[in-house]
Length: 128
Image: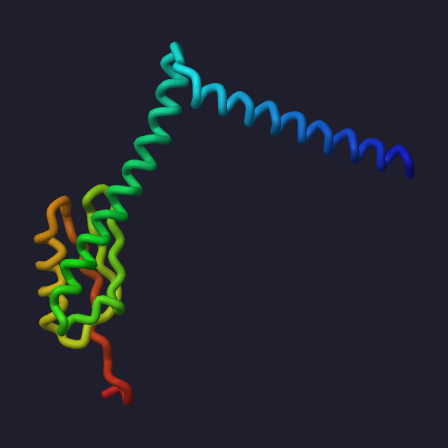
């Protein structure tokens, strides 16, 4: 019984030591100027991914703001997904004419490169 507990503690200590070492090396690579090509590529790709996500979120906000200017369209029923300028519209609108209108609004926002429109018309209660 004592052997099993000792072995478990040793394994736990090994995991803690390994994770601490990994965290230390990650901090060194991120904080120190690197001379190796691989280390600079790794640090740079993280910064690009963060910048890309920020740009995608900013583009989504711009599209929602543009849709919000049209009071007849309920932007709360529309979801916007933006990835590197490519926009996907999901959700529902109250009238069929609003589907193309929302797509045109999204295309008019600066930074949008393409629009995939998956909007549908919301059926009224009662199913008719």
